Length: 510
Image 1 (cartoon, rainbow, N blue to C red):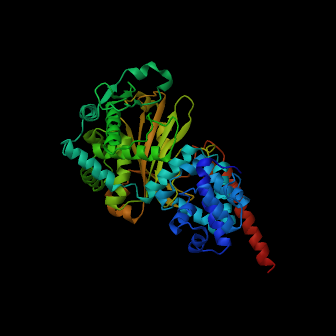
Image 2: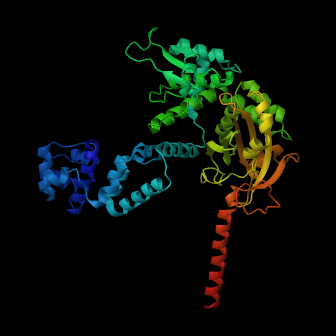
Image 3: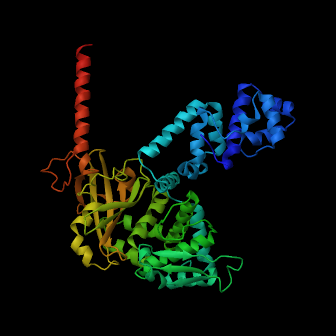
């Protein structure tokens, strides 16, 4: 398999270490034979240096090979998976270092046991291909794992938002007005806010924003402004978050970024993680951590679920339901000891009935219902889906700023787990034929019962649900909302019965 020139030094480093190990030579011994320093040889083996031809010749002679064998664009079978990693856009973009894995660790793995390392990476690549994962899915999955490791709380971003609030004298201002955020962008970072141009491009109407950044040496000059083009249908609270995110990009000095609000094309993990950081900054800016913790605690101390108090928080901070619930996922594990939570966003096209999971974050160690086979049908009894189905008329008639709030205690039959779920549904401002629901789910455990007084509110509906219709064993007389036969459940049942019969047969003949 051929490799690109930029990866030659990595392949050479692996080959060099393999041959040296086979010859049972230490770096010191190879250094003495070639007159190359130990540190220089180490840099070559780590893939950081590529030696001049005369030095490669000296290495080849000492290791009993040829110049061509060391520098060839072809590799043997044991290194094929490594070249696949180096050339795979998915694995090339995977942020190994964020999970404590350095490039050298992978190289060392190949040097120590090429066959075993090769088998491992081949398996990895086959899984990616088998599930038809795109680069975008792969990178976003890596980001979610990174968030889970940190329980979605990032002290450095919280502190940055607080510093910015102090610098702007916004510390005790709630809510932050859209105008004040817009003015900060214009005056501090030389932005031009454009609310008309995007309407002239119908192909770009799905984007909330498009950024045309200032370029060149005079990017700060008055005639070199960054132009932020906004969709004219955005509501004020959405604009506030967008302005806060742009402030985050600039204040945190995040250079690599997407130029559209939603992904036209995911190009790198750095692009994705910078979007996450800027968005986190915006949420922390609009909903100060100390203030939010106090308000969440007041909500949790109520003996019954208080919808009006919950809605009052939307107005207090002038945010959308999604902003509020997602901000809670950042604070609940850290300040309330509630890591067993998940966040989900569904969109529903009213004309076709199609439902799509468009955003999720699962911090729980227990399975949360997401990421299932695209051909399966989510349980219609489950609140994030049910609220969209049973409230189509009401949502269509509602102002997008007046959401529908529902709570539920779903018991997932298959994994024997109960949740407390807060779901907020509304229609899209940009797409009138689409409705969305955002949900924050808590696993009902001892920690939740300790932190939340209304956990057992008798007015909250309890219901047996499952992940999807295909996986559900509830009888038809129990569930009248089924939209597909329980094919996967029946398959699992047949397998269970076969295993039981096989065990009886073996036991009977023992």
